[in-house]
Image (cartoon, rainbow, N blue to C red):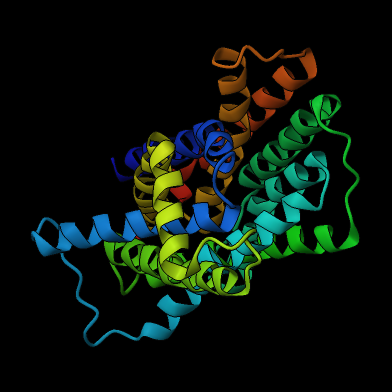
Length: 314
């Protein structure tokens, strides 16, 4: 039963992230990327705080070592979103998709080193199939992109995002021995809100977000007004893509091996393609369809023997 719930949670967070690209595009039309990240995490942090305030959930960090939790939050959401934002901006879409899609493979390596989690042949095959599927889907759809050439700095940013996501999976798995799923998610939301709040504040003070908006008060008023015009996107990203999705990730990491949990992230590619086809009426070629099937089979192979050989709940 635990394994089944973890599988459902993995598919759930992949689906949420997959559809998030549709609303993100609308939000970025009126908000700077750093502003958008700050607003989504601030909304998520306030929502989780309300749950604690009204005793729907509880957090208790007393007597627990915060170092592991802080390290986890440093890699995700702080470093990952910075690396991904600038990496995608300075790289071709195909390169970004391939590198991010390789995260589960790196998680498997780090999991074996730091968590002593072994990956058998079937799970190794599953990881390989999922990564191969991502490569096929991304390259098959590269012709529809902008043709942007990647830079060396963009490539390094993307590798930074991949490493950050991999270490987050390992650290969250380890932290699940001490902290609950809600506590880990709560800490992540507030670390994101505070960190990106500082980034946005500095950019307002230095004027790097554009023309003068009348000081801090004017900039804040402008942010609220612009965010209000895309409130549906902010709600989706703040509630579903932040609170719900990251809670589901932390939940899967409490009962599955790090590599088994991370492989669900490759399903995001499948969901994104399907969302484009069904909602935006984008074309789907044969190669993309075959790549999507490889990803689905890869996720299944990686987790199908979880009942008998999966990791014990942390």
